[in-house]
Image: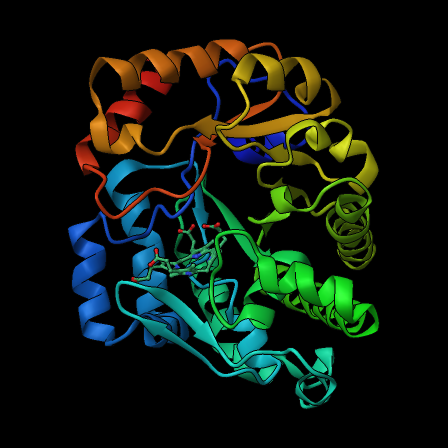
Length: 344
Ligand code: CP3
């Protein structure tokens, strides 16, 4: 039997001499080959639902860089769409959705078990990738966490402070809780289907967890993650889960234990030395180079990359950025980061 894949070894708690590496948004607009395939597909959503082309863009960064993991090409907002919300992307601005601010909007949503028909092309992409990836590359599936997805469904778009979602939570808690419940169930269904199709690990993106404070964080970030992870592991024993409660600050401490996540991904608002001391003591950590280094490159990129590898060297670590790579990044800086991590 071949040695187990490096990402899976780190997720199992092993300290590796060289940390495995992949990158959030590694298939994206900074790559000319991505832009060419996206052009062929038409718009972004057509690319997500075209299994053949979605497979192709997932493989592009693997071919170019030899990352240790591939992440399924899709989007967290496909789940609201599969529940019946309208979804479209405005070029240069981002996503737009029909809003859920009243009971009637919620009542029109489908049950969680009905999402699979819409999402079946995504499962086909996972099956394609499962057969197409190099033997040492781990396939990561993903979903948005309920709170982050709810912020888009309530506001109908991205918001700087998630104000509309906080307002609904304060003004109509039964409706807000019902939406969180539906999203929790749908997330379990979606991730479970990805694992059944061949995903070897899944990641839960809670990009806006940082705007939940105190008990709200416990109730709407920690509790849903715990439930999703528990149910997923009951259905698929041993499936590793990466949780990313972005900008959780002090709330990162204990997140492994409280949720049962195998790995906690950290953003770049915390230092790697702090994260090693307070988070890595509980298990595998993923992160956390500032994505702006992929634009600026040079000596600072090399220095910060080495600093992160050094800070996390005494425990399980998966090297990654603190957030997604941006379209203005230089593909050569990605290579420089990889070479630095691998000591080339
Ligand atoms: O990481 C990967 O390479 C896998 C694919 C992936 C995408 N989106 C592709 C994408 C993943 C994991 C996501 C997650 C996602 N999507 C999140 C959570 C992570 C995060 O970044 O905080 C969120 C909040 C979304 C919602 C979303 N999708 C927004 C706000 C936008 C528009 C912003 C932008 O960059 O234009 C998207 C579009 C999107 N999702 C693109 C990609 C490659 C760009 C689409 C294009 O080609 O025009």
